[in-house]
Length: 286
Image 1 (cartoon, one colour):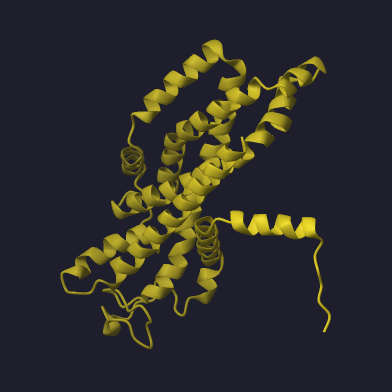
Image 2 (tube, rainbow, N blue to C red):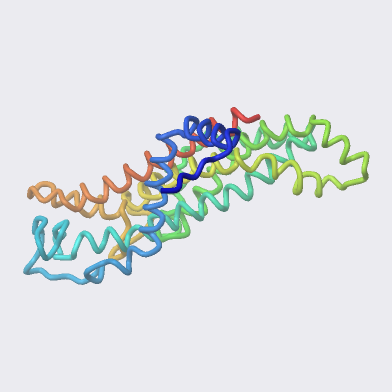
């Protein structure tokens, strides 16, 4: 029997890497990966069409034909959970992408220019900070009649200052680093320094902020649908399912609200935990 031996130095590095592994971070990363995969392929796994009603099977508990039971219209709850994952993740995903793009650009611009630009942007951010995100989403949804894009665009604007504040704080430190002065002396443009050097060094912090924002956006996006100003029936979305299941609670049928509510809870906790752990590691390396 042949035994393979690692060099002492490499074995020591692997040992230190294993000891440094964060089990909470790894667990959160696995759960988040499974949830994202569910949003991508969930509709392919659904045993029934999400809007297929069967009044003879209405409000049934979990069983062989319907693993999570049915709602008041006889629609399969598992199928609606699997289909609803896509909308429940697509909305927050767009919110994060839009707020990240705008917030990162404004944060780096404020740090680079400083002075009047920084002061003006800070005042604008403070005004937006005072606006509750869900209230802005409700107003936008009420004006537009609800739907997908109203809460997405409204929440994107509300989330932008949070991203910009984190990015600006770190970008100010980068702005005063020696390599920035060296790049300026070499004749590099401000755009190239910011895009190719400062932004690259800020990516771990930006990634951590994006992960935390996703969990919060998922909760706010679901809340908008729950309040009737987001996704509209008969579409499947977790926040909407919690709302639709409320009336069934009085009849003792809690499977719809409970299933959708647990999916939201697990997703928010997992993404927030992952983002906080990534942020701690990014801060520790700086």
